[in-house]
Amino acid sequence: MTPTVTSFEGALLLLLVSFFLGVLYSYEVRKISARLQSRRGPWLLVPKSLRKTLGTTRLFQPLYDIIKLLYKQSIIPETARTRLFKTAPLIALTCLGAAAILTPLAGYSPFASFELSLVAVLYLLLGVPLAFVLGGAVSSSPWGVVGSQREAELVLAYETPFVIGVFTVAVMADTLSIQSIVAAQISRYPYLLLNPFSAAAVFLAIVGKLHLKPFDIPEAEVEVVAGPMTEYSGRLLGLIEIGKVLFTSISISLFIDLFLAGGMIPELGYPLVALIFILEGFLVVSLITLVHTLNPRFRIDQAFRWYLKVPTLLSALGLAWAYSLRYLHTAILWG
Image (tube, rainbow, N blue to C red; front, side, top):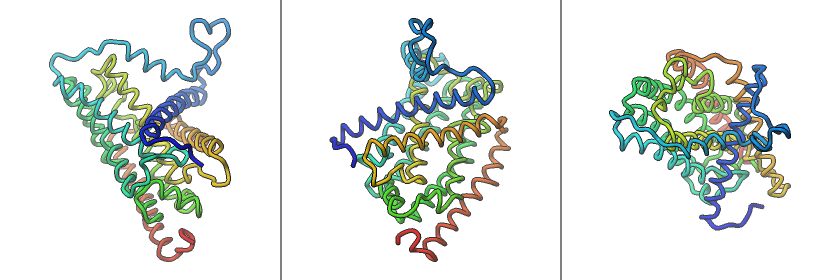
């Protein structure tokens, strides 16, 4: 049973919870990556002698970093196209805010039940990298332009398996509503078990969407400084960091909704369902961080070819498997 709130309150709640989960996921990436590389990651509990200066925990360190940026002044390059440069982070943040209220968390979203919610979320998530491409291209920085070019090429690479893998789930559930897709899995089996090919393709595409290794090519520090974000600073950079946190949370939540039944177990009450959803999110982030830590960075041509050879092939195989299940084994999907 989900909480009873108005649509506006529910939308605001989803935004806040998505952001909060994104902060925790970002901390987890830092912590696990540091441990796997035998480095000292951020503390969870700060020693008593340092708490007066550093606070009691570093769990919210990504949030502290964002707050610090929001208090700083943004410096706009004189030769940049100022309006577009300022607008790009706002476009990305608007797309992410709309996607957050359409993506169910632990089975709850006041707007996810309409039939085309899955299509809407896909378009909104696509708007985020395109906004970054725009911001880098108008920044007047050569590093921003090169980073934007890499971003555009990488989008073409990972969006193909991502879209095919996601719509494979829609074929299996016979709906384009995220809420209905979750409900279809509750009544039968999680699609991770029924179609692991599409799950693997979407998982690998999410690694690219989040710019984690081996696909952090647009922001390769030793090559293009920070890519499209090179000239951003202060409040504008803070907005971009908020967008990254939300992007992480929404991508993980969408994967859980599409392949892990949204963490829903009908026999359990909502607090336990929410806990299961969060634990599944931490598990998915752990696997993504493992990929991120154990791999070196690809070149853009290597990433493009790899996405064509592996995730795209997996997504096509998953689509064929979905049609086989639908027409040859209907009872498995719908009873």
